[in-house]
Length: 372
Image (tube, rainbow, N blue to C red; front, side, top):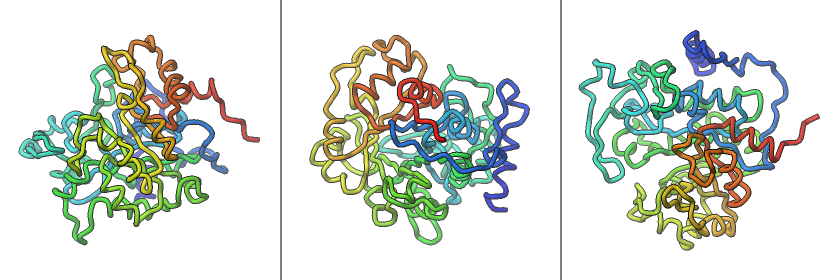
């Protein structure tokens, strides 16, 4: 049975009485049909980081559906692979922190140690499970201070299911897939046709009609940004798709997974000039833009200015409402943080765990015009 027919049944099975303390969300396909409201392009993009994962376990169908309901412009997902080569949505190459795999005694012998990004990591890894096996484990909330009531209730979803959720929305909602840990995935998973991980991702996106350069008519119909921390992956797919790409940037001291360069070298003028022909923007960790000392922001770097001078957008990550993540100068007020980054730093998009709060802030400060 194809995704078109099985997805509504899957999502209906997810959002059952277990969620009684929250409203059940009407599936987009069951909502009133009509002309889709276009993507807003007049203010910074609201990117739902792994869905509305401040409320639901990350990268699950309810997290993405909730983000759409709350006003996300784009829903973001990390793409990995199963043992049998199926593309799935999951942030970590291992399953330990965000699933209940440890409770499944039938998989006790699957624990492995791999080298990932230059470090040994022990746990349960997506590449050692088939999709059928992964569908038997449940996602759980990453952070203990967030709502735990949905732990184990929702399964990992595939890239196809993720795309279907976006395309089924009653307004235009973009997707923001990440080519995650491509070096590791290409080492561990071999496809029968000799294709690479990147090839499989691009083929899937093309299958669903994602194409067109940034702001083209094709892109506006089905908006997408393809992101990766591996510049080599973005360069590799540049001849395969004209969809816009975003180069992710980590802490400046960390080595990239596909080169021997640090992200300090990656943010140099010379490297920005090199990567510019392949991408429309960068996605830096926000502390790379404004360093932090003793939980207080220090003097901003010139990274945003240098990116903008090359006509590159800047989409930093990650904005979270909890006090643990808000620097002291924001007085435990997420709106003050949004105001600082949008109006003082001048970013072009924000990855947030709390789509609704960013949407509400923007509606208060820069509301979209009402369509007649």
